[in-house]
Image (cartoon, rainbow, N blue to C red; front, side, top):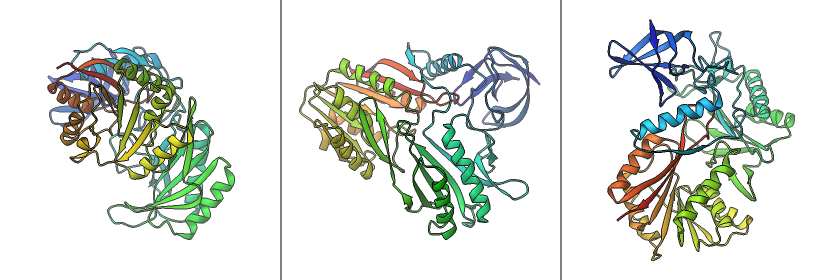
Length: 438
């Protein structure tokens, strides 16, 4: 049938209506007339496949041949400027159009920006081993990639060689349901400042002799590979097979060390702009003490500590003990003395009293995972009695939910800004700034 796309919505889809029911269509632009095929209906919403663009609007030719089937990118058919515009409209709608957005922070690089990617092993119809991403909406299938323009070129070359070596090994694909086979996933991580790369296999048996052999063969071909590791499937320990288990990333005048299992922002090209924006918000808050929650290896907190000497102390807290150790190491590497790191379970109760400070002006910086904050975590943050909050999120729906809880406690949203952390995809990063009003 033919439908008119009304707007783009969160998740990478265009919204249309058929017989009064919402229809979600991928790979479209607002105001386009399209031909679709309805796939299925769930909770009163139709999901459709795009068959043909009848009247295109503000569309460009995608760079990648996989865009109609791959679940990795959603907006390659839109220019960078139109992607930003669409995401701004989506973010406004999530906040029920009750906010005015600050100008967005635009990524200096639209393609080849990801410093981490995870790929899944699968089998083609002939039973041959393949390596790629899950097609959109098909978690049990694997699309054998011929190209990917989110990866830096060197990472793509390593991916292809790793696939070839895995195919030649004769080892099979790991099947979760039966706990059999061997290769599960492959993760690549790269430091954009020195191009060093870690390769992380997820396999049934990290001690397998063939895995070590093919890993050494891979490392010998690419001098940028500094370490190769293996994680035991499905959820086992991590084993270092060769080289080192750490990367060093430079952001402006700082160097950060992180390991294979640690979080670090995906798009390091936009990080200087990102950090500078957070610094401006802290200057507005003008705190004596800043709490850096979900601090990871300390990247944001240490940047602020280095560049805001008027803040008496920055206290980092993180639920990952190894990340806390690295945050302390990163403080030492960068000669920063006004930052301290604490290993605390931020999802349980009690830590708010531990961090409570007598300072009259406290700012809390929050950068949680996609799931956002639990009720326990929000209560503990309120125990610290901050005068201001900076909430960074890669999931605006959970961010909005949590900000509503803070509003009940007297915190008013002062500003919200979109960060173009994930070009070509539907993912949104946003920075919110709140102040206590009572």
